[in-house]
Length: 331
View (cartoon, rainbow, N blue to C red):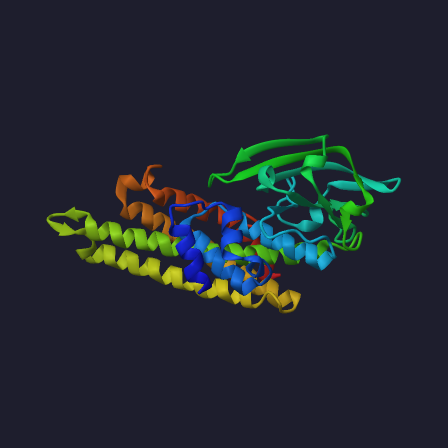
C-alpha cells in the first residue's frame, strides 16, 4: 500500500514537492523506519523525483540518537560532513569548533552539501579535540543557516541537477545548545549515518535501474528497423536480459543492506559496502546499455533517459565510491 501510494503520487501531474509528499502521504514513519524508507526511496528513484528524502531521513535519525530537538516531517534537514580534499574517511574531518564562553565558534569549510540551499536545519560535523586523522574528537552541531550571518554559501547544482552548496564558516558563533550528543564521540554515529543514507540511496538506485530497463523495453518495442521492431533482434534481447540481471542483483543487495542496518557495526558495514559495489556496477552497466540501445537519442537532454543516468552516476559516489567500499570490505 505504501509503494502504491507513493508511486501514484509521484506519477500524478500535481505538486511533487517535498512538503506535499510528506503531508499528503503522512510519511513521518517512513522517515524513521529504514524498511519503509527503502520502499519510498525506490519509488523516488523510479520517478526520478528530486526530493531530499535520504538527507532528511538520516538527519532525523541522527537527531533522535543525539537527543536533539524534533522537527515536523516536512522540514528539510541535511548533514554537512565532506570537506575539500578529505575523500571519505570521517576521521579526516578538519573543521574546528572551539569553546567561546557559553557557546562555540566554528571555522572551516564543507563541500557539496546536498540540499543546503533549501534546508531548514543543518547538522555539521566538526573537530572539538584531537588532530586530523584521529577517530576521537569529533562532535555534531545543529545549526539554523538563517541565523548564521557570517556563513558564506556558494550554491550550485550537482551533475544530476540537485541543489548543493559549499559552506565556509568564518569563526561563526553559535550558542551552547548547538552541540548535540556527546562531545568528542560522534564518529561512530557519523559512520552509521553514512551507512543508513547509503542504504536508502541503494534503494533509490534500484528504482532508477528498473525505470531505465522499462524505458529500453518500451523504446525497442516501438522503434523499427528493417521492417521489424528492434526488440525482435536477438542481440538486443540478450542485452536487455543482462540489464534485467543487474537490476535484480542490485535489488537483492540493496535490501540486504537495509535489513542489516540494525546489526552490529561490522555486519552493517559489510552489507552496505557490498550493496554499493553491486549498485555501482549496475548503475554503470545498465546506464551505458540504456544509452546505447537508444542510439543518438540517448545522448540528448530532451529524453528522460540521460537524466536518469546522471542521477545514477551521482549515487555511485555520493557518500563513497566503489573503490572505497571494496577497501572497507577487504579491511
